[in-house]
Image 1 (tube, rainbow, N blue to C red):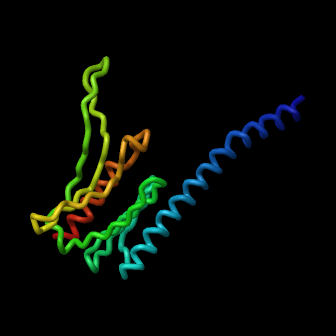
Image 2: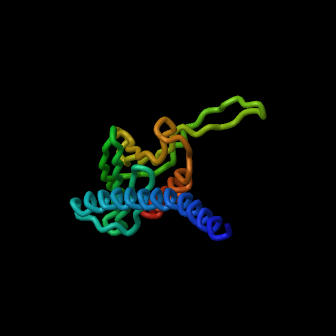
Image 3: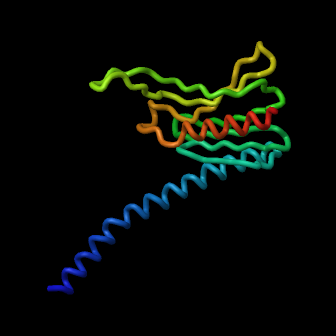
Amino acid sequence: MEFSSTVIGIVCIILFFVPIYLLSRSGAGKRKQRLSALLAFSEKNGLRLSAKEAWNDCAIGIDDASKQVVYVKNAEEDHREVLIDLKDVARCNINNISREVKTSAGHQRVIEQIELQFFPKKGEMTPVSVQFYDGKKQMQLSDELQLAEKWAGLVKQALA
């Protein structure tokens, strides 16, 4: 009886951890794909990224030497590759689009979209936005706001 209980316990533990392990490997593989797409795009433009990051279906990087930012989004319905020359950028801000929702505990703010906006030095040009979070496509906000703040800081350092 003790041996069969041990075997059943080990089988249950394996059945519990195998899906977690497979999901973890799948996520790491997708992250590598996004980073390789970012690196391919940056190499095509002659850039050497000093910092890079990937999340959800996006990746961003910066080349401090040439003062350029690259952004790649590889969603099924939306594929974007953006190259931003910081020499032409006056400032960079986070655009946090949110709305108020009435709940039983009062009002709660719900974030719908987070973007990093690059405003050009020439006023007649339109700002360039790169998306960090879209509430219509992603169910839950995770680290996107912190990532946007981090990258806004990196860009502001490069602009200084």
